[in-house]
Length: 562
Image 1 (spheres, rainbow, N blue to C red):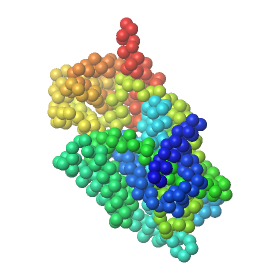
Image 2 (image 1 turned 30 degrees about the vertical axis):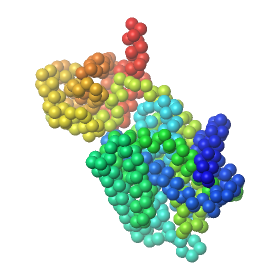
Image 3 (image 1 turned 90 degrees about the vertical axis):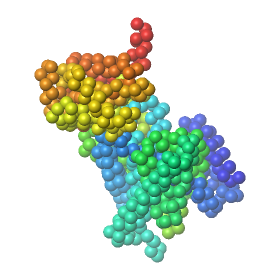
Image 4 (image 1 turned 90 degrees about the horizontal axis):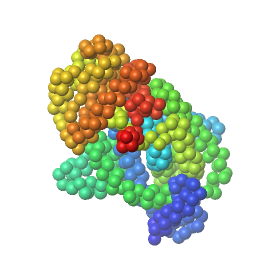
């Protein structure tokens, strides 16, 4: 009955507050605060620990889905900037928050470290909702979505390290020997990886031999519970174990994660309604007003840290100005992982002395972030010009991971072989890699595909029913392939299209030919792109749509009108 009351109150409360244009997460937290004030038997503050299994499962689910975002093939070419972003988030954001809370807020180093780790966490769910509502698509969106998921991984890891760095002695908290603590954190990471990887591998083995496709989704629930429970039994970080289980599953068999998401999505809102409502019930609103200065300090320090860390990472990675300027603002939302980390502090008896401060500051600031965060993300999307771009385009198959800058080859065959390896490293194909390469080389021998002005388009036919795909290789110096016009080849587009989609194949060739021959400025920019992200922006920029990256629905409409 108590669980039913919490779920019903969360659902109704969020719907009512949504009429005031408040995010559902904020509505759930406010509903939880109201339930706490109501002091309903069975739901009083001292009785909330009875519901830890539920909040643990939801937190495990959140950690698992965060881990599934770490798909290495999809992040190809984005690894440098995302790695830099994780590094600067873990250092700059944490450092800014810790220094602000310690020097200005007067908090102990232990409390500041824990809140610093909480500050790193983002809100993948909230971010995805805003992106979908804005119908946004592009380089900034890809960086934002991948970044916010990976930042949560760093937040979890850093939180585990923070816990290992502090212990209770007498009435306060002191630091362990730094070397011993870091070694303990490293062991935690290794053991969590072992637990999560074993859970995912076991599930995949069952899915191959025993479990039918209809039960892949339920099997993933078992993985989450098993990884979390094993972590509890062995003293390993359960949230890290679930995160690594998601990572292992998505990289070992990526299509399985889609089945899992499809299975859990219908009940996702119900799980989150209960999770955030319980979080609100743990927030003693009577402590918020006395700590309002500390709450605002934490919020401001987190914002400064996010902006500084993202700007630093994107500048080093040589990303376009729009990404450097607005990524930090778009990362403002705070969500499920932050709440989960706060609840883990609440459940740790040895950290009892910091429960009130961490819960009050963390949850109150999170409510502010949920009020302002979605608007901040939408503002960033509008400023980058990537809203309303989710319609299919001619070159949608050329995602960033399908672009290779710095192509080197002594012959056409070597270039085609390099691009074939790139294609198969980033996506599964229906035909064997060796057969694909043989077909591409055979076609190139029959008819050379150097089209002039430094552009070459080797191609392969795919079976009907397959999607068009391809890889673009760019050589800044140029490749001497004895082109008919005597010029070096700077761009090689390895294109694979099904026979039934021959018309689109010709459209792509014609569009590239127009762009390369008629726009010398665009050609030079593409041929001398600094990195894959820069090349992607050139190909997919809105001002280049008239050349070759136009919307397909507009093209079809114009064709029908003729």
